Picture (cartoon, helix red, strand yellow):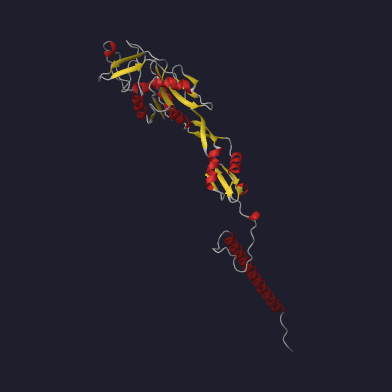
Length: 346
């Protein structure tokens, strides 16, 4: 009587064959996936210049690029506050060259009119220059690239406290207190007045043009309260800048600078302290203790320029009465000239 196969042994053999067949199918699937991935990589490398001869990899059919499928040439225009404008150059290209008129119109559509930026405590409004930006884009060429939009400041407002001078002849230290505050330094005008060096006696000695009194280029002349024989005078930029430096702020001397440079400073977000004449005189002169001839305008005063408006007028903080005023450029320039165009800026 022959031996019969055991049922459980037959089942075990069948399950083993099934596992081997499943493993073989899994290996074939993995090989197919790897081959497909390698083919995709090869096509990608060829499309983006991986082949120096521009040929398709072996075994692949090269896709044909029509004019409609050609990669779009793009100009990226960098704007303020990390913003960008994207401009397609393909429809603006004629026979391989950018059409300047079409480009100008496209740039004009892409750019906003203005950008408002903060520089510390200053708010500056810039206007984008379409023509200058279009010229920069034209220089990049039809293949595209990156340009920074050209913008020009047209107005500025600098945050500043409004301070009234404590005494009749202390406009300089009141103005300096305002100016320092625009740079984040808070010092009272009374403290600044105490820190100013003095020049000469409190009151002039002698008579006529041979009188001896102080030199405002070296220190404060006279009495802050305005009392005494001559009523006091004041001080010029040099000693004022020295006091500012003592309080941690280096000022730029704009004395005899052009008005345009002063306005440029304001548009950069920097306040300007200016010596102006409230009147054309009275003028007087004397000699300093060192013998230097000193000629002054007793209408001397100081104000702080804290902005330029869109119409070109100037925002002024005037410590005489503690007011904010709007002056025309013509008015400022005339009054500034009466005191020798003296000025300091943060």
